[in-house]
Image (spheres, rainbow, N blue to C red):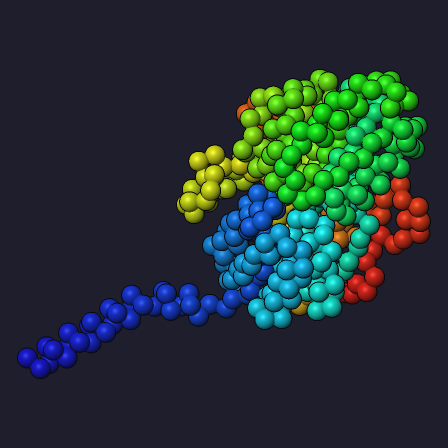
Length: 433
């Protein structure tokens, strides 16, 4: 009996060891920490929360395929809560306490400007996934969203064309911070280069979180009809750089006052599928957005991306999973994460300077179906440009696109002195093969 008991004990121990082997092996796998720095509360949560989820989806996908150089990605998610100084604090925490290898985050330019000194001081690595005003080039940042010549300038050129309605008068409407003001400075100079008089350009700004657009929309209607205010005849167009949850009341007010695209078209640079989720888009049909990706683009890569996101959103029971939407900054986030992985594996290291060097010229087939390339020098993606019209179902119908990817111009030629600036960050380490 004693011998039987001994054999049973040995068998039981072997079984338990087998059962526990897989979790123990997984626990012992090497890990690399990666930061996610997006507002999950406050005025920007409407736009940024989904980027956090996109990053987590991409990390999960990469981990399922063996990780990065065999390292499992361990996400470190923080919430800077639409508080710009808090962005800097959280960035410092990620780099010094959590010791992340890279950070994916920020939406507004004021948040990016807040964290930039931290990344440069500590030699961290930030991937920034949203269109912006340019006028910046840091060795510690890779810009996977659009520069002005990849979004703002083409959109205005389209509205000026006969195909886009031949707009002659312009209302530049934005949230009051660096991205709208700098973008509108560039657009004003561009319009003047095309012969548009200052009197035919009106600029308006509202604070973050602004919700009452009744007076502003009424003013836009009045301006479009007031030939005394403007020296030129012809159609008025609105260029919107409103950011965050203020887009919802603005578009609702357009509908309330019956301001149709056939009367005064609005082209937006920070409104996509996600921002229109809570808006009745039927009165908004024909208004425009300029991006480098739309959910409606027909491409096998996009079908795969949409299915992957829908499955992930359902499995994680995310808000809006019953109506899964994809948008441009989600695509830019996804591209950045995969390019970072490729660069790490090319460099055979998580070292910041080695990864920066390896990022040069990286390519990745984007969900749009277009092969995106990281410029060999200027840390910006070459991106195709699409202009889409709002549809009744909240999607966009592409009405114009570039023939192929466009190289970014971080330093706009419409700002004096930029022709003397280098198309490469200062202090960048070049590692030859």
